[in-house]
Image (cartoon, rainbow, N blue to C red; front, side, top):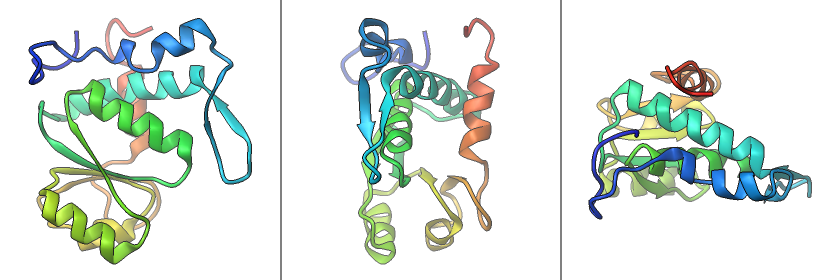
Length: 155
């Protein structure tokens, strides 16, 4: 079991988030990108599970608010499911940088999963940034996922 109890009194379990769809039809499309290419549930579910375990290992606590602003739909879906699986609260952000930063401040996010450093540079220093690319990033999202994949008992 991952994390502590949620508001419903049930501990979040990332294996149930996307994993049921992956178990029933692993090659069924979970998300479609701008290029029209689909990504299967099997890949999304694995990244979500590992991301959730990695977030817990980094110290995400139940109820922590996490801004999610990553471009590809499969990455966004996996990150959002990881946050939920770790007991966090997803704060989806709009695409415009100034608007995204304003929403993140208003929502009082504790963490942010983002593609690049531009958003991270506009957030408060106490927000933990999980970013790909150059600039301010406290951790890389791919490293968070790798940490979760290496978690004891994951397999």
